Image (cartoon, rainbow, N blue to C red):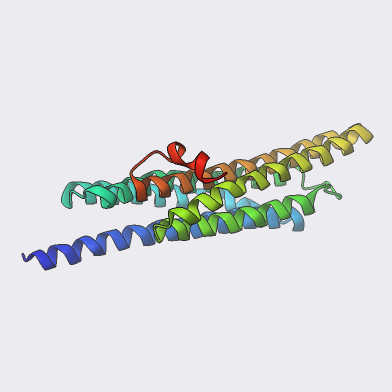
Length: 227
């Protein structure tokens, strides 16, 4: 087997791994977006489907894990190629968590299916839109090995944290005004918390992108870079 053939096969494996990450990311994000849409539309059918089909994302993570082990065993990557393979393994776990949050949100939606008015739903939708933008951009930054963009996205999580605080204050006001609001407002607060945690996993993707490119811990450089 020629060196050129080996290189082509290796490049094909890395490209395949990137595509698996992207495909899994798209599905997890779609489920997260759908879960919030189910909240707005009181769509119990699709909420149940998100819960029932969670195994699909779990299986995709297992597939990526097996594929990375295969690359490590057969190709023996080094330097940035090795870091990319390891990063894919870790990032797939973060993406899987987004899928889990979609399931958790779907379960809470079913629990409040009979509630007519959902306070803070527009704030929650705005929070989702910010996370969607960050997540899509973080995947592009990873696939393009763009650590500068990854740092920029990492910093944006502060906006998500601020949005969560706004939602918390809004819902607490409703709970104080009428104790009958406590039950469903608590569920909405948990939904907002799931989104806030999704933002933390986007940060993890950015940190792994930085490590992949520079071979150094993200925290060693990021504080200075982000000032």
